[in-house]
Length: 528
Picture (cartoon, one colour):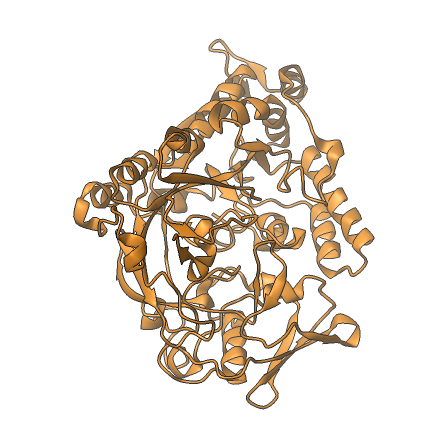
């Protein structure tokens, strides 16, 4: 989960699709690079393919393009815009001139009106997306002729240009439909290198090269994303040759290290696993319980045993190698501290070793998504650590359809993390104004000091002042944790070694479908 939710299909349906050979076309064999086809196994699929509802909002959509895009090093570069924006009025005005000759896949030309429509609709209160707060700075967007777009901001927002990777949709199609329920959500039309040719929900999405693509003709003519929620089944199908590549957890990726003809790609990421601790819950709503859980958890052991070293301990939402990370908050497991906190708060050990206070047992349920072995292992390790401090955590697997209605009051083993700027991941995770807004602020966290830091970080122009704001935020989170941060995870991908041009980027939480070595699949070349 993150600001845009990618949700796996129901476990039973996904498993049935995964073990059926016809659920995705077989792609094994030497002729695949020559034929230009690729089949990738991913854990989940989008709920929608409409950028107005959040699809591709952080870039890497193969169907759409934004005004800007990111290169391998995440540096911003022109996409639908002919150049980087002209910035004026002290950072309150951004002007983009559109690239000449760009057409949507239906042959209609891209114009400034399409850009204006996209942003105005995304910001419309009637449009059911959860990323409006990310564009909070936008006061007005207007066209100046057919080829120029001007954004006027309410306040200078240092990270605004990076927000304009949001994909642009065609007004002449999407504008005729309800953005929440229209056919465009499953039958998209864009300017990107590929078009959707078929979507079998819960099974696969197949894409073919867009002959009108402004960036040239891709060598990969078709690619399929086979939706396989279960990690083990995904690995089995990769080994059988039914898949060209797959995203895998570390323990399964390691089983392919000695395989000839396959290559493993590792991507550093901002992706972290954390336990949401909803404040309405009678147990997790107690700050002392949250502090004790933070002290009880053994993050280093999770990295070593669960991730096989492919990750780092998470002391907060920012990874330890982020420039804004506050090194003073690094901390090791301290069970003695956890027990003292609970003792002082009145949570006393009972006969079964589980603490209680005023008749309330220190016990709560922790949900994790079915088929996700990494989250399952995190949940079980977390429960084991918590029990040593006298807190009972009952780990329970469920589909997202079951988890969603319960997450207001029930803890969830969740995943978050955004690249590009600290504001991108932290604001939606922690700001009280977004408490319970879909997958934003799932813990319903409310801390005025953190809110102030988030607002100062978002509006600040001086890098030093922004760094100071995020430093205050991270320190406040240690004292008043709304989540137990566990690990930052490196993403691992295994692919048949038949193509050149593969690389990885520094990745957000959302990976597999949009990120991975196929982030630039339109640039791949067959091996000679």
